[in-house]
Image (cartoon, rainbow, N blue to C red; front, side):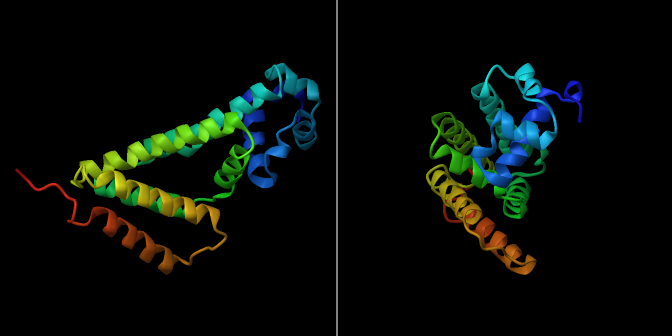
Amino acid sequence: MSDDRLTSRDWVNAGLKALAKTGSAALKADTLSKRLGVSRGSFYWHFADVGAFHAAVLHRWREVAYENVVQEIHGTAENRLGSLLDRAFRADTRLERAVRSWATADSRARTMVEAVDARRLAYVEKLLLDAGVGPGIAPTRTRLLYWAYLGFILSSARLDEPDRRRLLDELARAAMSKAGRRTPA
């Protein structure tokens, strides 16, 4: 690929792929330029330094990990929760694991992970509230759902479709159970 064809978005997307495949150590100008078959000059044309590139990668991850997901979820609150759970437990988790691993050693990555976590939690809590789960229990159920997701992405276990479906049905049933639901006025 020629240097003049690459955009900053191409570099960032290549960074996300490298991050998911080999971790944050791959997020260097030399490593990525070799992978893309271009000179380091192309990298520095688009980014002032590696720190600026890392910031762009983290912002793109936020788009992929939260903003794009929320925009694609539609329907009633119950349907949105089911769609969100299905998507979360079906997705390739390598990038999520890599960003979280990076966050253990990098304050900028940690700040972004914390921000995405907060936005995800707020979104799920709103879904539960909209579905009638009472405000006294919705935050707890939100955390339980999120911790189940985090445990899943950090585990190496993979589920076959029937087991995955049973897990998701049970998670949704527990989150939406009548205990803790608001009663109609």
